[in-house]
Amino acid sequence: MITIIKAKEKHIPILIPLLDKYRIFYGQNSDQEGAKIFLEARIKNKDSIIFIAFYDSTPVGFTQLYSSFSTVSLKPIFILNDLYVYNEFRKKGIGEVLLNSAKDYCILSDYKGLALETAINNPAQKLYERLGWKKTTSSLYYFWEAH
Image (cartoon, rainbow, N blue to C red; front, side, top):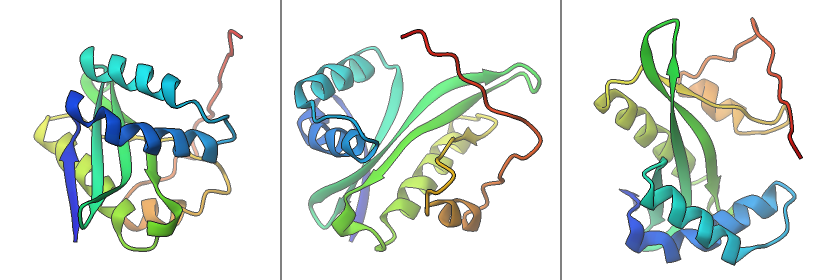
């Protein structure tokens, strides 16, 4: 059974290994202390909304949303910045439940929608498209890096 909860400060110890594995998945070195500091700041400062997925009673995944704004539509939006499920728990519908929880929260919050960016070769694209996400082909994404 899959259960989703909105993370609070008391859930940081549960989130640390998930965030660490997520970062490792994206080629970063393990840094559980850094993950702890990062999560504490996000939750204490209310910078993001984090949903944790449990399979039975085991924490197995998370998604993190950040608020932003659409000037054109004059509405707030969420950026779905992170989505991760432990490898051994993939293909069990957990990612789908996390994405749908984010969509439900977006509607409940009266936001315009959710935006996400993913790697060109990320197999989760099929899931996004099946759940109604539209691939943007009319614009380019640029990034300037300070360091």
